[in-house]
Every structure is written in structure tokens, then in C-alpha cells.
Length: 91
Image (cartoon, rainbow, N blue to C red):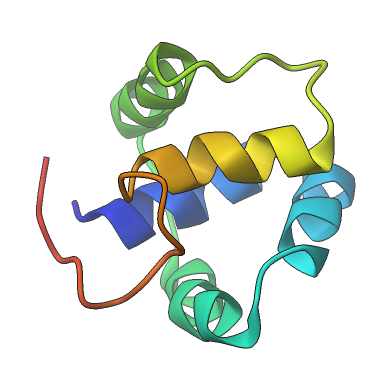
């Protein structure tokens, strides 16, 4: 799975309210990259969920983080840059 797919799964996992606050901070390009991936998610296996969760925890995610902090962690997947579809590197 590529990084944008990981972000889409992660946003679903943190819940609608928190994910909405995070996405409000993203620019239009980031949103255009992620929303189609979220819409295409039908089923995410427990193993895939665990892998994604572990990846973000490893990057520093903690449940009590504010939306700006969560976005910073998400962008760490992209070496601190904004989220782009250009990056299709798989993990």
C-alpha cells in the first residue's frame, strides 16, 4: 500500500471528528489526493489496520494530539512535506 492509502486508512481510524479537524488544515492539493482514496476504501483488514496504526505510532502519533500535531505526524510520512500523489512508494 502506498503512503496516501496509509493516510486514508489512518484518518478513518482516528474517527470522523478528529479526521475532519485534521483535513481542515490541509491544502486543496492534499485533500484532492486523499479523499478519493478514502472513498475507495471498502474493507480494511485488522492486520492492515494494525500495520497502519503502528506506522503512525512509530512516527510519534499519540491519541491526545491536537489536529495540527496529527497533521505534522502525517506529513512525516512524506519527509515533512505536504501530501502528494507523486509519492507512490510502497511499504
